[in-house]
Length: 230
Picture 1 (cartoon, helix red, strand yellow):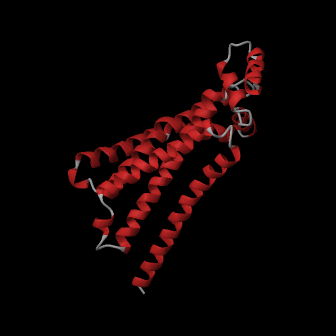
Picture 2 (picture 1 turned 180 degrees about the vertical axis):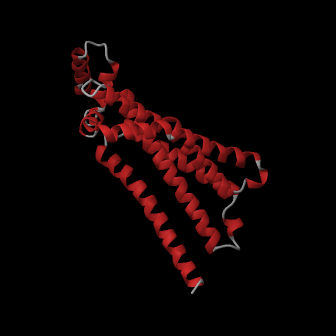
Picture 3 (picture 1 turned 90 degrees about the vertical axis):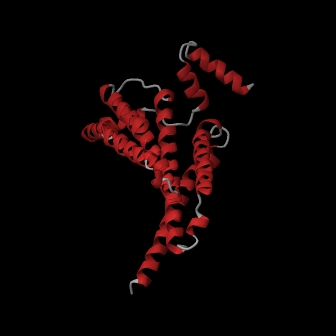
């Protein structure tokens, strides 16, 4: 009842003409809005213009380079090995960054530059940018972690590498990790209103945990290489 009454009150406030405002205020009451972009633009207009230009033109080499990687590995059958399958998936994730996240950030900054005091709807832009950015971030970090583990096994278990890292296991790791990243991303919308502390903690700990794993593996590999060359 409380939920419905708050919804009806909000509907009356918006005269029933702004679904964007209804969704934003009813489900995302504590979320930051696009006004943070406007505040940043007013404080640092030169830096905002630079960031807009970077995010506007950087997608071109980002998309082109990653599509080239995908094309080369897809066409060359001899390159279809587990490590390259992970690399292709990472390239696809980076392509999504160039297609969606970077242009969306650029457009949002440009809107804030042209409307420094205007009203910007936070659900059709801020939420979209946040979800796409978090998914590409977590998927890229997850794939980088899988690639690091793959390299770690190939160096520390060279004779058993091909029995440990198989194509089936590689595809299984991708099929589990990417939907997991999507679940973490969508939890921002569906679970955050009910469990904000838990969702926020998981979304912060997961990327940090991946970075810790990668750093630990790289340090161990560095120690192994140092011992070999002493």
